[in-house]
Length: 79
Length: 292
Image (cartoon, rainbow over all chains, first blue to last red; front, top):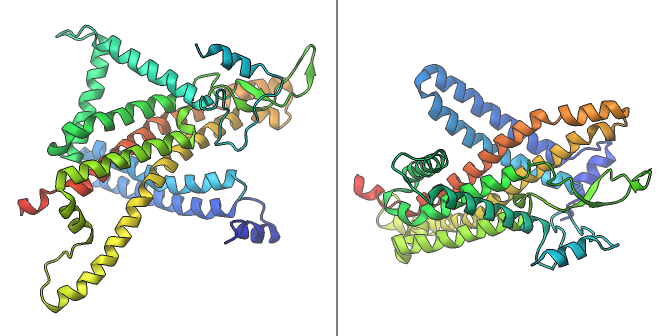
């Protein structure tokens, strides 16, 4: 499977950025936004749990962001 | 002892070229720029630990207090994840991961790391050439090297396998992976056997992916952060702003990104350690059956 397939198709359509990173970034953005929304809701329900909710949401955001980091490495490699 | 070949290799006319960005510069074959930094970090952490624990007092000195804080907090947090029966064996490896990765991530923020090195000469300024872009840095944060993070992840996987097998035994381990769960009998058990065999195969694949994701997450975060910082610092130059404006921009523009990299450094160290602890917990909790 040609790894440059998507990059070539995107370049033929006039897109010069990294398509892989675009889609991965969209997924990661949605995931992190959902985590933040649920964290805010949880603290609103139980303001005393702020510390625990913060720790848990930091961990979950780091894990969700790592998918976009994998794609970022691909972007530095050219596709 | 190593200084003369290092200096000799550094001062040759043909500076060692980077094959690809992950390879690093090799001085004496194995001594790449990130291994040099990891030697510095290890020496610094060991020196700090020794000087904090050389005279232990009942009323602790500030350095000893800081170390006691770190060790106690790590111990409590990891014990709540891994479990009391595993914490004695696993604490040294997990705490070392945290402290070493933290030191390695934050080392990359010091001035000089990544910006002093060899590269293509630029415009001529008097007797010297300017160096607009450092292609082969002398010092590089050690976790920005995929070799280091992959080594740490693989070492952890070897220890995980050893600890799991010595804790639950080989038969229980295989039953945990491939065994039929849910308590069905008769015809359904035979049918479910093959389904759970397939589920076990998927589980084995996801276990094999763990070192990949552990190493790539840490490597990607630190490498991308380093790239981001150097992009921000050289942004004035790249946009061809007037020289005074690019000086101001290269000092003020990276400041919020430095704070981001501080946060990312400690967060990634924490996530690496916590994920390793969670992987250990997943395969060694044999208390769940006895509590019901």
